[in-house]
Amino acid sequence: MDQRAFLLQHRRLTRRYFLGWGVAGAALISPLARLRAADPDKPKENKAGAQQDPYFTPTADFRDVSRGKPLPHSLPDDKKREVGLTRETWRLEVVSDPEHPAKLGSPLTKAAGTALDFEGLLKLGEKHAVRFAKVMTCLNLGCPLGMGLWEGVPLREVVWRAAPRENVRRIFYYGYHNDDAKQMFRSSLPIGRVLEDPLDLPPVILCYKMNGQWLDSERGGPVRVVVPEAYGFKSIKWLSHVVLTNLAHANDTYAEQNNDVDSPLKTFAAVLSYPITAQAGQPIPVSGYAQVGVSGLSKVQVWMQGKSETYPAGDPYFSQAPWRDAELLAAPEHWGALADGKLPPGTRGFDEQGRPRAWPMRLAKVHWAAVLPGLPAGEYVLRSRSVDDQGQGQPMPRPFRKSGHAAIEAVTIKVQD
Ligand SMILES: Nc1nc2c(c(=O)[nH]1)N[C@H]1C(S)=C(S)[C@@H](COP(=O)(O)O)O[C@H]1N2
Ligand SMILES: [Mo]
Image (spheres, protein in one colour):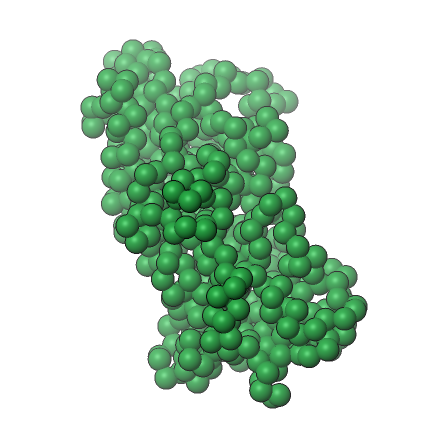
């Protein structure tokens, strides 16, 4: 779906909210103009993961940031078969790190004919498969890449098959990278996170389905890792190797690019639509979305600052500004991208009727809308911010850029007589 389509969908969904306020005039809300205004250099910026409907992002609409020359998912089918990028030829090795050996009773290797194949993975899935919703967000981008319903087998089931005994402190893993060491994209976790799920998080999984379909090649199929609470770089695509290690620290490829690789998903809010020009004295409808990180989301707030109004120094995150609460929109009734728009029974975080057990839902997105009181003519800066479950306003409690986007966004609105 292109930008125009998803913004129009967002508008359709928020229209119902605005109707209740008697400000449904379509001309008031101009999401396309907003994009031109906010980002003149990047008119094609894809807010795929932000749209309202469908709630889950169809696989083809995900934004792709994967590396590789050539991109593994672009290889011809016979090459994919040759290198194990099809369900029939996929093999996973689970081995000890030669440099920091962990003691394994039965490593899974191609040489010994013990590597795990897709059938073996599905067999484990019959008993252990889990499914959960998660927004895929790149630590280095401001906007989610897409929202998926991810399904697979907990990684620990495969780790236990290799019979680890001792000297296992961490696990690292990588996927097919054109047999070129320079192209390897690796990620890592403490072994404890794989063996146990803290704070009722879903498990780290070997994922083979998204939105009820086989995981496609572009999303990392046949099998990728998905780490529920993490940014995208932990969720390695085209998975081929899992290495158990006694190394005491993270060895993620992303760490080499100055990223904070221990940072779980942050909470933040952003604007999707607003009137590029509003009429003086008339109510101003605005709407947007929020990513709900590990710190939860208690509310979204908005604030219009007159361009000539000065703001006191020493409060870089505008914590003292006259923020107004926006309304968090209810969970969708039709969950898009899924068959019949319904959550299959047994999905983590949803009840048997397929309703979310909590809303907003952690590790997912939620939409919001607000109608701001009319203002005198002039130029204004519109900001939105999230407030997490601890009452901390965005970008706190973790404001640094290289641990993931949380900066408060600012857009300009003109109010005319
Ligand atoms: N093998 C491999 N896995 C990878 C990457 C990669 O370049 N190669 N990119 C990572 C990064 S940085 C992100 S943000 C996510 C993006 O997932 P998506 O393509 O499904 O949106 O994949 C991750 N997994
Ligand atoms: Mo990323």
